Amino acid sequence: MLGQVEREQLKSDLILPWIIVIMMLVMLAAAIMACHIAGGQLQQHLPHDQRELIRTILYAVAIVTFPLTNLIRHIQLRLNQTMPGDKSAKNRYLLTVTVSAALIESVGIFGFVMFILGDDFNTLYIFTGLSALGLFLYRPKPDEYYDIVEARNAQKQE
Image (cartoon, rainbow, N blue to C red; front, side, top):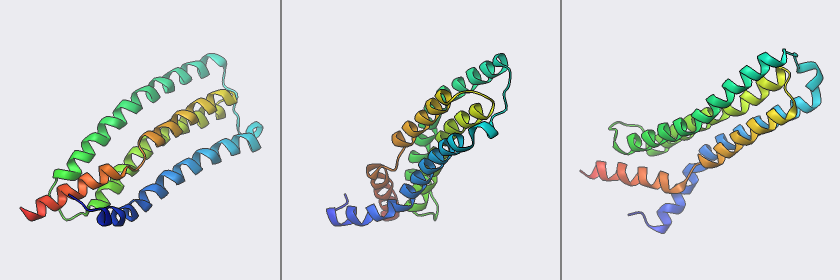
């Protein structure tokens, strides 16, 4: 069991994972700003039927992405605790957060793609909002990291 002082020290290990999540949010905001600033020049007006088909497919992919990301994250967290090797808990957790954030960021990119294909801001906001929600859900969590550290420490003591 980690003491309070050790937990505070381990919080500093979560700075880089938080920076990654913040950078993903900045990229979402940059996409929205780019669409507002240069929207007319960016858009390629595909026929409505084709856009509707692509939008439907991307919504389905987005819906599947959330539980798939949750499953992948769960597997990674368990592997972080049990896999032998030299990688530190900090590096293992950083990879887990990066993979989760990248998968969820793709949902926001769908909105940008649909905007470029001629959809309105509504679709952009929906996909971006879903992506931001996913980044919140799969943010770095100290308890997950502490569990990895404790499991790694227990393995070293055996």
